[in-house]
Length: 348
Image 1: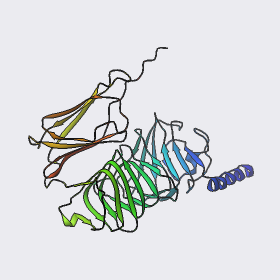
Image 2: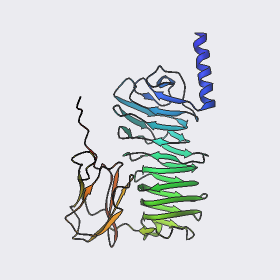
Image 3: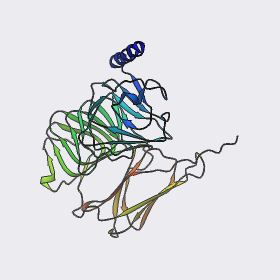
Image 4: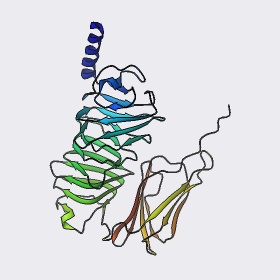
């Protein structure tokens, strides 16, 4: 018994000093329970609680196919990566819980984050850490305290806040969508390329925010002073477009469908956007954001009832679509699946 206790103490101290990788094991449970963390994938529980230097990995080598990871209390980790391809992970937690992350935070198509937990990101690394929530819309507030961050798929619920105190942020070929945005504390720089920033409710930006943009589209309630409080010193860049939201927001309903390539490597896929209830005869302008950059950035003068893009190749990532008329944004769809090559035939 004494040897086991000494082993646990040694492992715990080494994890604090070196930045330990921990693997989730043992079925469902609480994130801060040492009985669910192993030093090896699918291994025995090591009795180690995740700490500020812990790299958390969720893969397929736990003991169940459908798991719940509950976030309680105050938690501080280095990174979180979902590497599962078969098991489903469901992350839950109340708004009384907080999760601090110092590095990459990467979810995937088998990870479902429904927690109301507050997410807080802070690091001092010279490189950029990745934040990718995949299709999840985060139901808690998200705070960036400082650091360098590559925002690859970030969607935050309408009633919640994206707050940025300090840092550098890359947004490339994708969209950041949030109910509210606030940044007033210190220097904040957005490096954007073919990006869309869509804030549905309230925007507050102080004089130390700047956008070094290439084809940035910033969508907000720019014509309502109570919802758009942006210091005159804020710079958006020469190629940025600041677009409003229609007074009758999202009155137009659109639909989306796609066909995948008939064979691997054949570029004969397509997507179709349909204009349904509440839409007029147009014309409309459309924007497309996809992390892999395989869609055109947009098209103008679209006339209902449908619009199609053809001769597309297999495409990774998720797709966001935005539709505008002269009054501003009238419709949008987010986190859409994209055409993929068919599964190769197994000839064995």
